[in-house]
Length: 355
Image 1 (spheres, rainbow, N blue to C red):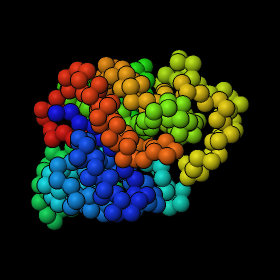
Image 2 (spheres, rainbow, N blue to C red):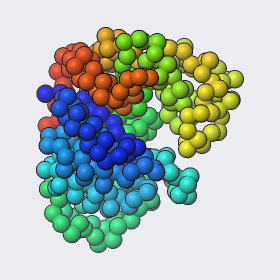
Image 3 (cartoon, rainbow, N blue to C red):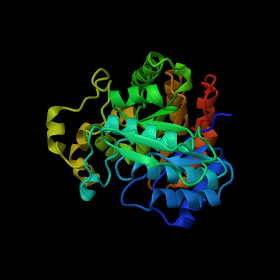
């Protein structure tokens, strides 16, 4: 049965994170995607704690990056989680941004870095001893000193850029895009991924296309939109998350708005984007998030599902006076049935599938 995913960040106490994870599992969510976001609580430690306190929900990174850990260490970490969780782990990888400026990380040739990292990780998950000399990474006559329980542990690439999405179609089990909240954007995303899969000689339907969306559900739709307006402003104007269809939808922000936030570093937070809020209308919010009443969001998730999206990961964002728990329950009970009943799920018969 198709189940949604939920994004978590290590910004709460362990007890709080355990409670949220258990509620998600009980509510019918199928995956917990834990952000490797610096400098919150560490991703693999947190996932291990969640694995020990859940029983069925799948657990993985959404996303880690190829730079802050050598791919061999990522292979060891995700294989350990898979063993500890009784084969419930998956790996989500992207090119990353958070913490790079502080750590002096050189984000060199990001798409190539992901491709090389995945090649190393997959070889090590098979138990192979490998010699790898790439342009970004090398690994000399090395192997994991334990036997991974699954060689086909699912690997998903998260990218909003065309090159990353093409790479996902060529080599990954799934592609994740943040903020593709419109049918138009979803169609471009799916077309890129599945077209690349077809060109690589793969079954296009075997590559899952997943939308990652901030979600605020409230009885007052205006309140929900206002709750996510600042996040939407940064998503659209931050310059690190390209979208293909904002212009054709009439949602491109004017130059005077973009100039006010041009060149801001990723770690600046949300506050500087408050100055462009007068240009960010409800349509902008709806283009990159799920904001509104449960009924409104149910209609919108059905529309993006009909555009080819296979699944959704939500980051629950409560409205003032609301709670994360209420968003989780409302999405599971009132929204998800509209998505999961729209059309049959694409099946991946070749590899273990998460999300």
